[in-house]
Amino acid sequence: MGIDGVVNSFTAGADRAHTESHPPVIRIGKLKTGNGVLPTGQLLVRDANNLLVPYTGAENEVMVGVLDIGIDTAVHEIGEYVIHGTVKARLLSKDNGSELTTEDIFALYKIGIFAE
Image 1 (cartoon, rainbow, N blue to C red):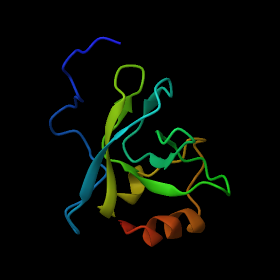
Image 2: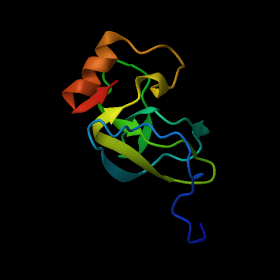
Image 3: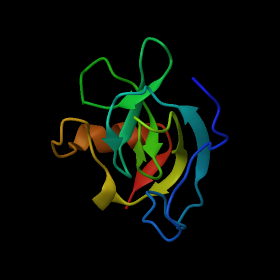
């Protein structure tokens, strides 16, 4: 894989998952490539290779954060994700497209991410 010098790109003014109610702690992490376009607010877990992948709600998954801004994993493999702070509840999503459950929201709360 060649180096193109671009770590990530986004449109200024794009809707981000975090809010300023409780300033976010944002990390940069390596995403699994080939997962298509991940939307802003995608809940994330780590796979067996320690790569960030979409949360599906499976019982054995441990949520690690919320994608702060959408990204196309066919083009980029590095993403910004919220590990602490408040996020916009209306943007939160699972990989399978189903609505978040009370358990999902509580799992976010347990890792210090608060949906509003």
